Amino acid sequence: MKPALEVADIFDRHGAAYRAEHTATLSNGQRRVMGAIEACRKPVLGGHIEQCADCGKVRIAYNSCRNRHCPKCQGLARTQWLADRRAELLPVPYFHLVFTMPAPIAAIALQNKAVVYDILFKAAAQTVRMIAADPKHLGAETGMIAVLHTWGQNLFHHPHIHCIVPGGGLAPDGRWVACRPGFFLSVRVLSRLYRRLFLERLQAAFDAGDLSFFGNLVPLAEAVAFAKYLQPLRRLDWVVYAKRPFAGPQPVLDYLGRYTHRVAIANSRLIDLADGQVRFRWKDYRQPDKPKVMTLQVDEFIRRFLLHVLPDGFRRIRHFGFLANTHRTAKLATIRGLLNVADPKLIPEPADYRERYALLTGTSLDICSQCGGRMIDILVLERAPKPAQSYWCDSS
Image (cartoon, rainbow, N blue to C red; front, side, top):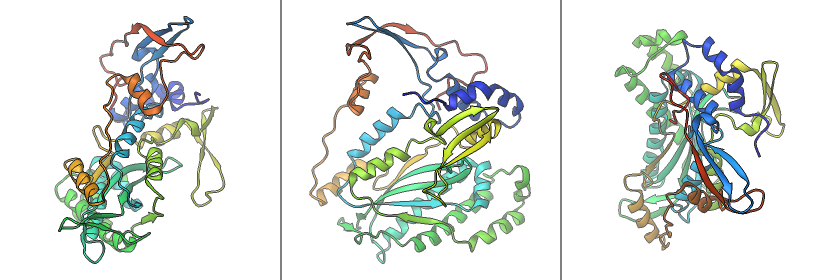
């Protein structure tokens, strides 16, 4: 059922005015995201008309924008990704680690998203792999799935990554080494190494001229000021925390299903748009049992939503260690052999969108809602011609 209010509705009513007022500060990527969400499942993107072969019912289905920031376009991508991951799960405990960054670093990240978010991924992965490889801890190569989130429930900028790590790894001599029951790696040790590796990479990015500074951060372009800015952060405790291990493969999939293809705010959290204000539900983790409602001026809501637009082509889900894309298939086969687990049966993926949707979800898009008959395409609706300077149809 369609929510009473969608992000698209907010952009429809106030997006043009917001773009006009913030022309100088909006990036092309942010404009494309706004345009894509506004156009999603509307005549401008084209679609098709279908008719029931039994009762004659006619319905129009407009195309989706497929933009990864659109709240309406993540369902099939998430389901397909989870199906792929299901075949890769091992019969071992899985742990959930979260790596964050201090607010002063987050401020630099907001102005240098591609560079600093990449450092976040690499520093966290290197931390886990180095400590896991140490014989004093695990003594093995582990694997990791890492997912970037850049928001908190209030839509403020809060970059962090969620990591799902199997509880064990491949030893240098080829054995499978399991972690201790209920314990993976020391959070305190992880935190200190992560801080050092992150700051080393950030300093290297500065030395290479890869960082830019604007507004109140302009003074950091000077090496002395930058070093002074980082100095207190070398003594600060960086927040790395481990949640309780998952109870089995299915809870891992359930968790990943909630987190991997999220956008800054789901349409289901929106309450209403009235008098130039947006109200939405949010969770204050300091009082997790008390539901709260936040009210923002519409311009502030749009500004916060757009804070989380990622650079074009930036990968927000990454795999490391024995789960890295380059050798995942071979290493998982090796591990299954060590654990005496049969290889999963792979089901060929149908090329047709509707067949794939039915296979993954168990729900058919071809069923008539009126009589249960089969819907057949009778006419293709072409998308509107792309204007000379348009952002609405980009799906990046």
